[in-house]
Amino acid sequence: METAAPRLLVVDDEPFNLEIICEYFDGTGFELETAEDGEAAWRLLDSHTGYAAVLLDRMMPILDGMGLLRRMKADERFRSIPVIMQTAAGNPDQVREGLAAGAYYYLVKPYERDSLLSIVRGALADVSARLDLHRRIAEHGSALQLLVNGEFSYRTVEEAAILAAFVAQACPQPDAAALALSELLVNAVEHGNLGISYAEKSQLRRDDRWNEEVALRLAMPTHAYKRVRVSLNRDDGVLSIRIVDEGAGFDWHRYLEFDPARAFDPNGRGIALARMSGAATVEYQGCGNTVVLQMHKQQDTSQGT
Image (cartoon, rainbow, N blue to C red; front, side, top):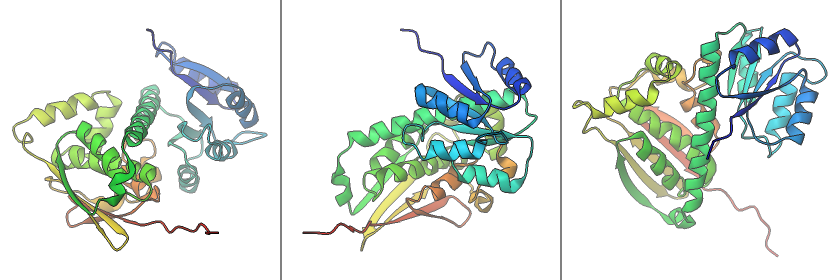
């Protein structure tokens, strides 16, 4: 059975920009629809289903990009669609505002075709992985909320995804916790045990060689026996999850917040996303090969009658 082409909605008030973007995607297997302002884009969203991503200009008449982004993120139907903002103005405060409002990435014009395609493909891959994570969560029962202590170890990215979905069920907010855990558990393999740097991952993602490189490094004798260890402890309403890899560590301070200077890169948001999920506090320790998440039991505010 043939898979339908991913549908992208491209929103820009300049017809020339729309023409260039359509040329960028020519022959790539994507199906594009266009709109020249935010209201026109909203009508398309409201009357169609199945957009895989939205490429959105910030400065537009009638309804600008930020207005449409906020409207999408407030609507359950469109909340999970990745929105890639683009603008000719690279003001750091505007970039930060867009990312905080829920934009997947923020591109500053002009940008290269290969970089745009890499970021769009990365967005679709991330959404697919997240949907799979939610499916895995739904398969597990709520009995893990009763878990007091536990220890786990894993080696691969695939095992990290499985463990994230499993351990999330022990957390007060399983869906949000699954996102944070997935990012941190995968980081422990890729950047920790396999020693892949931020710059290396950026280039590998752009070259579409990321999965191949991870597989190659996992097979190396120097990495074959490295494990990531996860311990879980629940005490007095506080759940603590400690993740320890066997890597040399890294300068984790610069990744705690979104950095507009890295908004164009196809990676490097995982730690900030984990902290912004609202599910847990995230604390790195020592050289950076240990991270601790802490989550507090939600209070029941319902009134009995």
